[in-house]
Image (cartoon, rainbow, N blue to C red; front, side, top):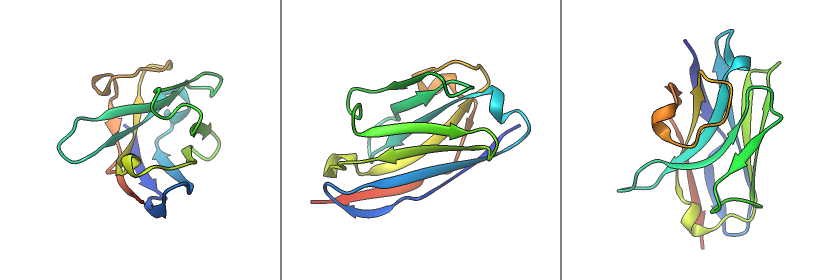
Length: 124
């Protein structure tokens, strides 16, 4: 069992940056792939970025490639999402998720554990 808690969301102006953190409990965190998703009102979960169990592989959605960076620290049981050049259309609730498989998945159904989400609002 893994519990995930996101933090770092907030209000930022367009062009600004935020770093989201996702703290995980549980001894098996380091063996799981991790992902970040977001959900805007009235829309489905959108995959943003994923990272393999050891951090050696990452994968990004086209919508955030070159602007967002996912990373993890398996000693601190934490995964991060650095978000730069934020746009108003990035406004959403952001979620981290854990996949019991070690390699990156891009669909929400593949993930087994979810955090409660953190709100990101980008003003124009």
